[in-house]
Image (cartoon, rainbow, N blue to C red; front, side, top):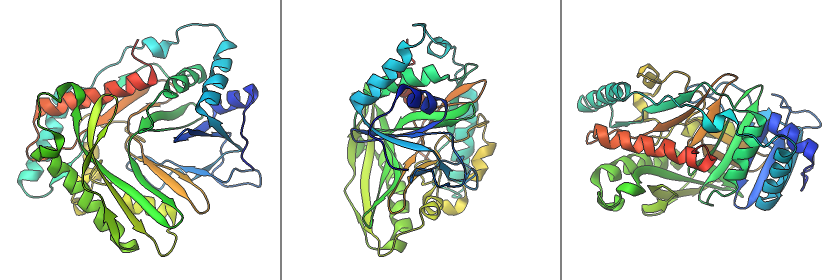
Length: 362
């Protein structure tokens, strides 16, 4: 079905019930449900592939029924019109009580990882922790959060997918890959400093622990991409986000043939930015670390796939929900030099950045 450059109140209502979303630059791509696992004559040309972090076999690629391309102002205006239809109340999610992750659980996970590092089994792993609430996310919640996300800086990719009472919505700084016109682009994004600690720590570019973590990711990605051609990369530099600094290296390769996009996802996910270095050590064992229950899509690939182009995000800095609960995850890279309190503060700052950008801090 052809792209539409506007959306009606009926369309936004349908989208908020079942939808997929990508902001790329100043353009917002909205895919309206219902979704099917197989394309039909009325399906849009872009499919969504967003499997769980630990299971790339399900679900299938999802196909919607209508695609809309909106400007930021158009998105904000239609969401505000939708919200104006109902009572002006504070939704439960906005004042929800969040149960924070347990420091004891994270300390145990860090100990397990550093023990494996000491035995030379691995060099790095990325555990995740989750804040949880008994509130779910309604269509009105999604509309409110989209209004707030319309203010997100251009360094972030806003994305989401929801259907059947569960979903995910967030704003990630990280791509797994971007393929267009024969060029495959990606990044190494690892090494973090909360802005409120920047005066207490060395510059990220001189921080040995953060640079080691970053280099492990960059070298792994370049090795994985080398099968498609000669890899080009930038020097590491600092990416500034609203509350965090990250180390970033841009990486690209000119491909002689177009890769199969789902297979490309499987070849790259997870990089050591979210998984384990070296890859040969596997990453499924992290499921057994404390506090990992119900991780689902956190850190997983989030791909928008067309016939000749594809953009795959790394599903971090998001809110996930089911029919009776919601959660916000955060992860950190653990290497031999990692310190418990420092990593714990970083994890908190990452979750706080999600709440702020979604308007959940009241």
